[in-house]
Structures are given as C-alpha cells and as structure tokens.
Length: 377
Ligand SMILES: *Cc1c(COP(=O)(O)O)cnc(C)c1O
Image (cartoon, rainbow, N blue to C red; front, side, top):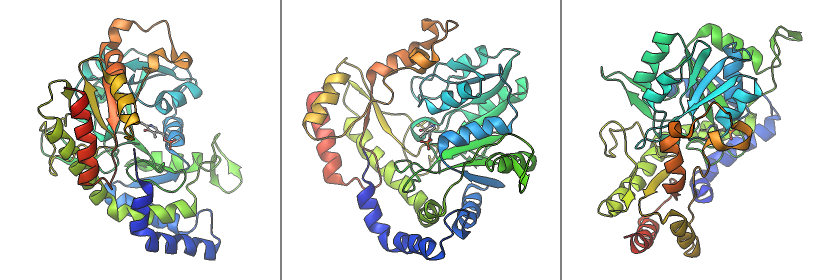
C-alpha cells in the first residue's frame, strides 16, 4: 500500500545526517529539533500553536482532556473511521455518539450530525477521512449555533486546504477549536516511529494542553491537573523537520496518482471513483483532498472477489474499514438503530483502497488499473 523505502532513499542523506546530529548531541528528549519542527509546522499550517505529542491517538485524548470534557458528555463522531477516534472518547468515559457519513466523500453527514445533538452534546469530532476535509463550513456553523467544541481528527489530511464559500482558505486541522494529527510512518507526513501533534489558535487552550502532555505540570514538579506523558522524541522530530518541506510535493504526487486512477476507471460502469467535494475533480487547485487513501466503491457485489484477485496478482489493497464502529463489540449501544447507518453499512461491503503513496510510477499504475478493469467490467 505504501513504499516508504523508496521515499527514504531519496532523502537518505539529509535525514541520516539529522538523526546523527541527535545521536551526537544525546538530546533524545525535547532536543532542539522538537522546537524547530514545532515552529516550522506552525508556520506551514499558519496556526498559533503546535503541541507535539507521542501519537495521533494521544493527540485526540489530550484534546478532549484540554477542553475539560467530563464523564457523560456526549461527543459526536463518524461511524466510518479508524477506531482511535471513538476509543479515546470511551477511555475518558465520555459518551460516543456515532453518526452516518456521506456516500460520496465518506465524511460525517451534516443532517445526521445535526439530528444527533442533545442537551448533553459537548463536542463534534469530524474526521477528514482518507485525506479529504469534511464539510467544515457547515460543521462550524452547527458548532456555533449549539455552542459545541470542534476537534478535527486530521490524522489523514495534513496538508489539505479547505476553502470556505467566501473564498477564505485554511489548512485542515486549524479550523476547529483543536486539530490533531498522527505522524505514523504511513501517514502523509510520517516519521520513522510514532508521533503526533495538536494544533490550536487558542492561547489558553495551548497553555492547558502543554501542561497536560507533561504530567499536568505548569511549573516543574507542581502537578496542577492530572496529565499524561506524551512526547515526540527528538529523532522523530529530526525526521519530520527534514520531511515537512516536502509535504506539498508529496501531496501532489498522491494527487497525480489519484488522477491516473480516476481516468483509468472513468468508463467502468461498476466502479465509483472517489469524489473531491469542491469541484468533483482532482486538480492541483482543488487541494481539499490529499489522498491518504485512494478508495473505490465496487458496484457489482464483487468487492471481496476483487480483493482476493488483486492479492493473487501481487497487488496490495485493503478494506478500510470492514466493520462500522457502531457494530464493533467495544462500541455497540442499544441507542443505535440500523436504519440510521445506511451509508456506512453499505460502504463496508463496497469499498476497496488501492496502493497510494508518493512513489507510484506509471508502470505500476498501469498494471494495477488494467488488472482491475479486466476483472470488474
Ligand atoms: C492513524 C489515525 C489515528 C491514530 O494515530 P496513531 O498515531 O496511530 O495513534 C487517529 N485517527 C485517524 C483517522 C487515523 O487515521
């Protein structure tokens, strides 16, 4: 699905040198690279505060702690996403409220979201799934109307832009009260281990969160709140500082591969290609989608057969995600009604994600698309 080795070979010299510097300095924790990467990412995202942490799941948990959410508070998120989002809601004894997604963008459905709001609702967690920014304009309007916090789970969409109807453009993850991300190796901006970060434009919130990530300390050895230990280590920060300047070109490489896929499947009546929300096409201006995944919907009921057929031909592919969260044992709840999850229940049986990374060449893309078009007609 990804080719991290070829990507590494292209930046080996600079990245090795920066890692060597950390080793020479032995500043393994909170070394200069952590501060430098933090500042670079703040500039790139045009956000006031980036708080690095240990991974994207911690980032979500810390965001919810930072907002002071209390047990019993309801947090609305999408049924069709990676479990980390709902996991931390449960872990903090908040009440997860899962809602359906849109059939074309796979992102949280605005009508369903609005319907799920109760007097106990405190926050919305839109997930910018597969690299495409959710409908943030509508989400921010709803949040304002009902006085809710918005935490953007931006683990899959770092680098994406969102354009509001008035033309204002903002980076994904910097629109809500807090944005979170993951630097897991296969994410669009990946390090060589685990890493994550929290973004906010709110000074007070940033201060609170900086204490939470560091054992609840605002003054050394004075623990004002219950915190956690969640750090981005210096070696990972060194890798990320080297890779951040390449993020836009990495996003473009992904978009180019997506464009190739889209063209190849354009006339296949049994394949639905992913849709970019703004213009419905993929261009380098339409930068609301950074293709963390390239995900097809197979219409003729042969998704599982295609999955096996591709594996038999040595083509990686994956089903993201095979089970809706509301059907996962850990998150079942009698409040949920199946008719409220029509889209997710359908998608789990029709979606298939193809290889998507920065190093795909035309020969590979041709082989993948020809194999698929020969099998699904
Ligand atoms: C990867 C991912 C996470 C978790 O990130 P980790 O760094 O692996 O903890 C959270 N949410 C989404 C949508 C993700 O894709």
